[in-house]
Length: 114
Length: 112
Image 1 (cartoon, each protein chain N blue to C red):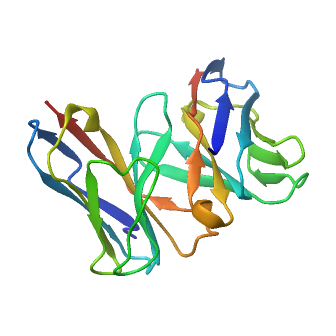
Image 2: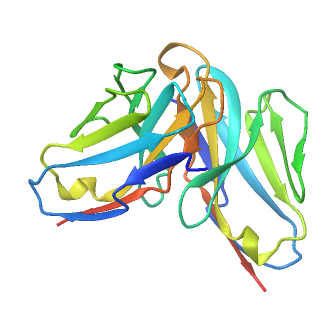
Image 3: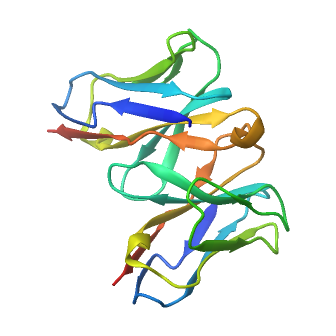
């Protein structure tokens, strides 16, 4: 059974701090790993990572994938209160019964205090 | 700029009642998905569709049925609601299986 585990489950920081969110996975047929941000409503797409060692970056957010050790990290530098959200990690299957399906982790709840 | 639209946004049902959740997307996406989100469990796939007229079971399909009569719409039905189906339901769509899925704002469903 495919499995995605995120850590920590929750995190409280102050504005300006840097945070690292972790995602490890065990899946049979891996195609890519995705990060989503969920505020009050819909999860919104952040990054899709397919290759090891290539950092994806968007403003203060960055992410990298290690396919050998089966994990990914999401970094947020100089956090702001608007970064408060649930961050979801998901793995996309590549073939067989996993083809095109996302398996999600439990999510990390990030709270940024002013 | 609608994207994925879910109706209704909230609903309270009594045990045994039936209802249908509607998902509509205006991006001409081939693939559509229904998830449920419960505290501490992330999102779990209920059913999905790889094109008009097709449906398939996901991870937690029991107690739900789906239909995709038109490409832009994906319906999720609860025939006889149970308290265990209290959850937030999300619909998503994607252009193809390898692309990121785009989510609707969710339907919060409570079953008493």
